[in-house]
Length: 230
Image (cartoon, rainbow, N blue to C red):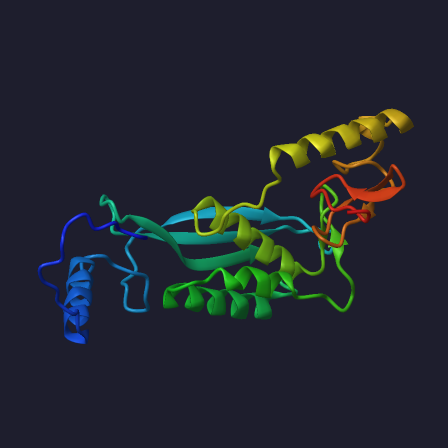
């Protein structure tokens, strides 16, 4: 930023490294009362938790993912909510070993503190050798681990650690118009399929949702707006 000097300079001084050290030390002192997430933070007697149900075509029994959060600097302007531990329960004992191992590793990363959002991408990028599946709504899941990552992403968005990706108003309006035109052209009935998108829609490689339809000579995704012609 440029500052215009309207008067004569009568004196000046050069700020040295020692002055910067003093200023940084003062700033750290002012923030010393703020508790950040780290391994030494003691677990309170009560934690706030959220439980998510995962129902896949791979098993008749659902998985229940519980993520417990710790409230740091409670009742202060610096109050934050951070994940502390995760548990996964199911009647199906087939995957018990690796699920227990996964929950312990994820919980350990939670308690390390710092940026834990990388876990979402790591889990979602796991592909099953037997192939994935489509969950209700047409979204493709490459593996059960990837869906656990999807649950973690939803939780981090809920507590404010991640921002939800959304389309702007123009894109939403365009998708709405395209979808209305397509549905009108084939006279689609709501009870013909369980997906939120037209029957016969192809999977979008951008958002992994079966929402790609042929519209105006172009494959267009009704979920994220991806178009082969753009």
